[in-house]
Length: 376
Image 1 (tube, rainbow, N blue to C red):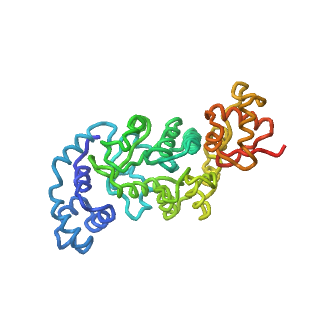
Image 2 (cartoon, one colour):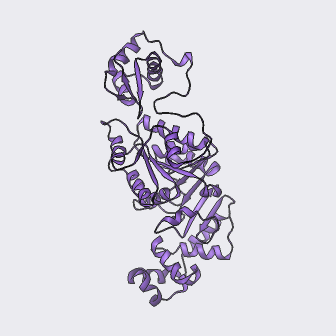
Image 3 (cartoon, rainbow, N blue to C red):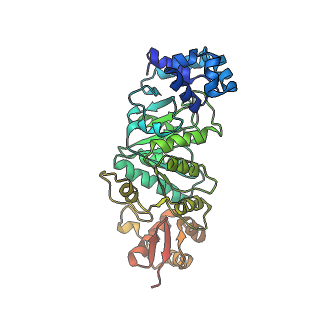
């Protein structure tokens, strides 16, 4: 979207390199406007942000890289590409809960979604099949209820959450750790185009920014701040999703987690969160009740449940495959991934057999997408 003079000042302010959002905010508080901050002398700036940062600022502030400014202005000429600044009436108020809200950021797609009721859904890049199904299912139900689903456009859980969010009117918001002229990972390029068309992609990083490791904790704080709550679907103990959860707690937001197998590394982060006070959830309704969101939802979708039951979706219970599944189940809870490994059956075949056993009362579906043979 073409910029007026004030917005161009904000753009040039945001493109001065070497100064993070916390120092940018200190400068704006001291000098009032981006233009005044860029014109400030070294002696005026140094007490605010320190000698080294002040020298870098004053060396670069008068003339930000002209090529980058022109490139960004050209990018912003498109109707669906936006610069959002602290001075804008529609700057998301939830971001002001951060100690370091971005002074400027970039958006591609539906800018109106930035003020929508929203929930963050995050988790492992190396997700299990069950984790991906859970993320997509939760996001789908929430979006059908008009809630925007926020995630980070990473592989695994993030991508599944975005796909689910795109299915409903709530849509989805992707917060990324690169410039908006890049897609990372490249495997999500088609998904990014869908989000830009029906949802919105957001970044505080200028065009051309590479996916550096230090960008992603900064991205995560924006996911946490824009969301009224954060759901962690799957996470190892070292997952960046736990950083997002901590940031959500620090902001006074709710954190939710889906339990899983005690033997799965992908569940240990969620179990740690639950031990530390996160809300254990089995359905989207659990989240909505906790947050007191009064929205019209599709019928509740519980983990392990099937969307519909037809005769063709239930396998006979007296053939060799069904007997083999029952033998492999044992009497301890087991998840679908483990059952697939034990039985060597496809997911569709296994789910059809399990559904038949559920209907006959021989198998129970448990929280976390697990199944258990009953003592009949």
